[in-house]
Image (cartoon, rainbow, N blue to C red; front, side, top):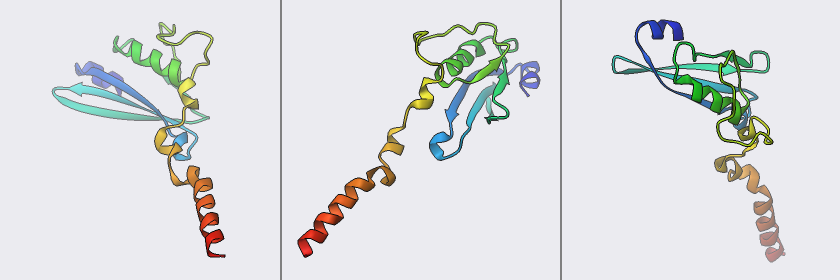
Length: 130
């Protein structure tokens, strides 16, 4: 798909990487955003334990270099044949894929995480009634 877009003089706008573990699934997705004649095309690739590597599109789109390096560094996504796999931001001592360990605030604040608080409130109310 990237080759067809490149041949049609499309340009890569960005690559978005996100982790679906926070939604209860053990997988990651990449969304490639291309622009062709004023229309943005989004191509989504799902990465699983069996299929966990994507090929580099840097030979077709030079600006993919930073996007690929960022997702390798922050999410630990494997990019085959990436011509410049050096880190962009994080110290080499930090594990690749550090954002896989982050817990989004929306997940942290949902009802499942506050069960203990509600149990204490209900126990106190039951104690008042007795």
